Length: 74
Image 1 (cartoon, rainbow, N blue to C red):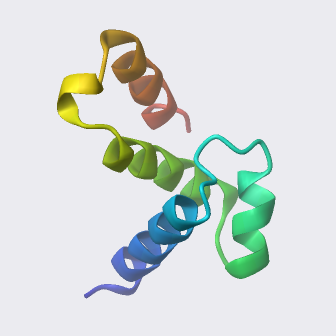
Image 2: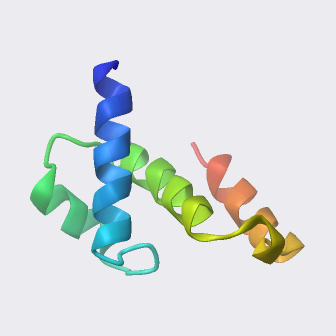
């Protein structure tokens, strides 16, 4: 498994396990555990974590739009 993919999976697991998906301090809290990560990586992976928490039937158009908006932030 590529190193970046491993980091992504580990970070998503931390975000979900510690219930940080909607915590305003998520970046700071993740960086306490994984200081080598860039803010942009954490932001990207927060969205991945959010998607994992939603069943497809609960993904309303509003939620999909919000997730797409965050996916497009550079």
